[in-house]
Amino acid sequence: MLKSNEHRIWIQTLETLLASAVIAAIVSAAFSVLTSERSIAAENVIRERKAWRDRIRELSIQIFQAIQSADVEENQNSRLVLRAKFGLLVNPHERMDQEILNLVVSDTTHQAEEFIQRVELLLKHDWERAKYEASLLRWLRRREPQRVPFEEFRPGDEHGYRHNRTLRRNHPGER
Image (cartoon, rainbow, N blue to C red; front, side, top):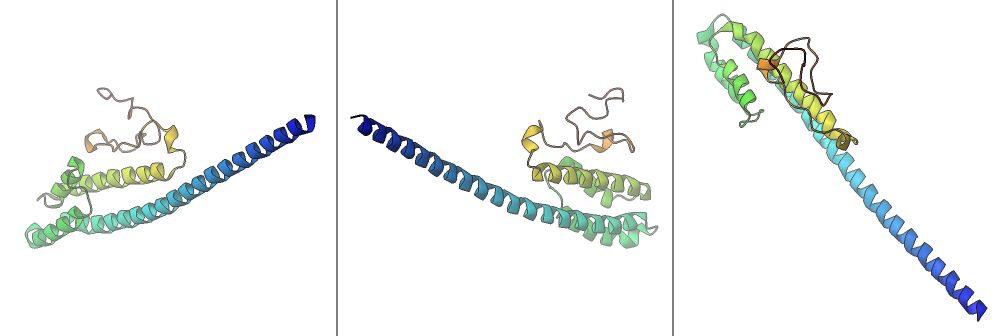
């Protein structure tokens, strides 16, 4: 009788070990597939975002030159085409993107610098967002990077992209 109990215990232990091994293999395979798919998706998104940022940079240089041009009437048609190209690359529902587009067809050359600064903020936000989304540890951050509105932009000041704090605490009137 004792041998029968030992034999039954040995079989139960073997069954438990086998079940644990099967469960571990399934979990490992599922984790591997998810990690692989996430990696492939992240690579594709990163590559596409880089290409988008490059197109925005190239087009922004052309727009800057057109805004700076002394002959506003002659290049107005060219600026409308540039605005259309730029408009196809930005979010039509984002107020800050629309403000950039409005500067493309403005009739004053002094707005060229504002245009570039707004595009810099757009590119910086996209870069920080791409890094956030590609990070395996993004769940540790409380929220994804927020875009800095032009009205709050102060060149040279620390931005709040990497920190989960309010932006530029040293300026009165800001949160």
